[in-house]
Length: 496
Image (cartoon, rainbow, N blue to C red; front, side):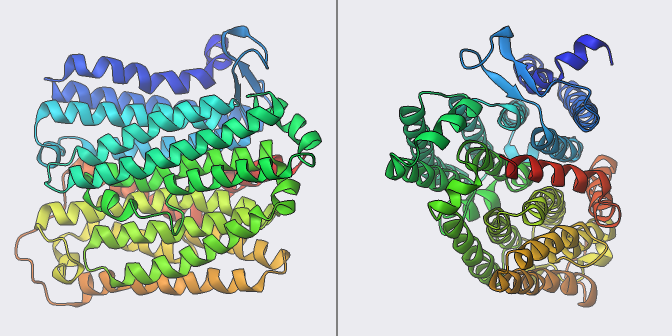
């Protein structure tokens, strides 16, 4: 790439979807042109994120990008490191198949061409916010980007042409606003005692002053944990998620579960590991709170998922359970536990996107929402059902699929910490996951067909589904680069 693009690649990845979001309403009546623009954005994003990973891993780019040339603490910094490049790659890998899936497939779910254009604008704003959340090194910028992402997500939920979408979106908005207030309060506490909004400068000051004001630091961290916990659907703060994810349009469900909740987690990890540092988390017992919330989420949300007969709602409760794995891994405070957390984050993003897209296609074609009504669909929609099956195997953690690698490293991290309870729950969570996903597969393949007319979707949707299924297998068989990047990101956060 030309030197000017390489030098400005981080900010390019943020503004590319934002520029596209500005352009797209001007071509609202030309659906094919909109879809082509989205594919261009998705392709350029994947190319740029892949190249950024290459530059970061080979030391070909500066670790700090100064917006406007102003150095910190006066200016705003973008931190170009292993964690940022890792999450940007995850975002790019999910966005492209979601755009493919949406091609000529959205008017029925959202209502009209004009509404389709607005739906795409909200997705682009969400992508830009997620890219900024991955890269920013400024505390207040985190809050601004979190708000952009939240408003975009609420809009995506409300865009469904369904009578309950407004109710689900309003509930999401109320709880997310409360979470935002807590996040802003936590940032305010950190700013009061450190005098800085730059994460690096705030961390240096916090290490020196925390023992004089331990209660203020504890309040700041609790506010941040509760605020981001609401937005990331940490059990028991997940009340908005089942309705929002099950009612949203299918591509929005994939993005909300696969990417949006992960963006909030990345921000929380930045606060906890870059600003507060692991020592403070252990000293103030924040790691224990994360651990028990994660353990309870894995078990109780899985039990709730088993009880759901509506397919998308079952997958929504599954997301709550899988978020528990990520908080549990973050609480282990060791390299293998945290690298397993990051790899499982990427794996879950791919798997849950595949599950929601394939489930949404089954529901759209058949008109059947309940698991019990999908008997024999494997014979009618072989490609769609095969993708759902591969993703289910990955989420359960069967060897040779991506979920196994993440759960294996989480298990090793728990054993490294001597935490046998967490190790047992990680294994039990996989059994419970099988209990709510494998019945869907059994009904699809081994029960008499109740659905007379159904067929796989068009070529763009098939490509999107197959792309995600291939990723689930590739990450399980050849985790290589993604696992190395996850390990490097974990080492960066754990090293003072």
